[in-house]
Image (tube, rainbow, N blue to C red; front, side, top):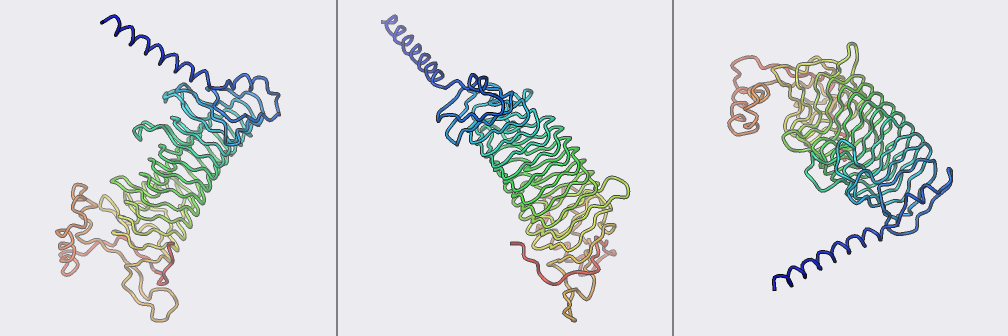
Length: 413
């Protein structure tokens, strides 16, 4: 009886193994087709599933028409583009490996003047990875990572020492970051990212343009670190929540232009750490809507060199906070709208008759003593703040002064 049962189990196990092998054998071979294709030609794949990983090492157009899947079966990078002037379009790429050291990806690009467009990348550790690759276009791809812990996922789109690339119209969900490392003169435009950590993260990357993107439900919208000359324009960022939630953050970054952005419903709308950093430089914040955040602008320290003009601050629990006992008086504040402005406009010119001034009373206790942040907006601190404003025991500290506050409300829709 025992032998008979063991025999049955062995037969069933062998059957499962053979079934699995048969399933693997059902994948069509793609590498021979790529090897046989002539440079400059177009290879249109028949509908079906193809076996990866594969390498494209010649300039040609690989077209899937949305009906061809390349499955790497959990091994390596699904498609390596190691050439110049190729076009990868309409593919479904799945099943990369899990090695962070090898940057196992849906697509790796190692060349220039390539176009990667209209692909769907799923169950891939990294999405699209460009290394020392210039003048490429990454457009209209839909990217998601492996279903693992957020910090262990790879980046949806990653640039490393790559210049003059265009990252446009991509949709990223449930990946980790879009990250730009040591890369300059790239355009990141009209992308959507949600469910990740950093929607967009710059490190040591200069002169990049970021415009018309939508980032929501991520831990951080955009963070710019050690990256000068970046332009952030017309981006919509919302719901960067949690204890470290930041809409747009800056660390030791200079010569920024930040204009026409919407930053809504974040823990910190703008976070500024020693920026601008380079001597005799200025960061310009113009015509942004910073609304309904826990803190509108959070300065890590008493710094200088930022110019805030024509911005709209509305519905923030705290408009401006400065840690470490400092103030924000060394920045330029002009023509901003403040929904807590307490003055009048008797001549109806759209400008307040008196400057808008923010003073720190007892409510700055949570800025200076970090453990007290737990009690921020609590009845205790609110009562202390009320009493301090009613009958201050010492002169309050001036946080900022906008000499030309705007009365007219600017829409944040």
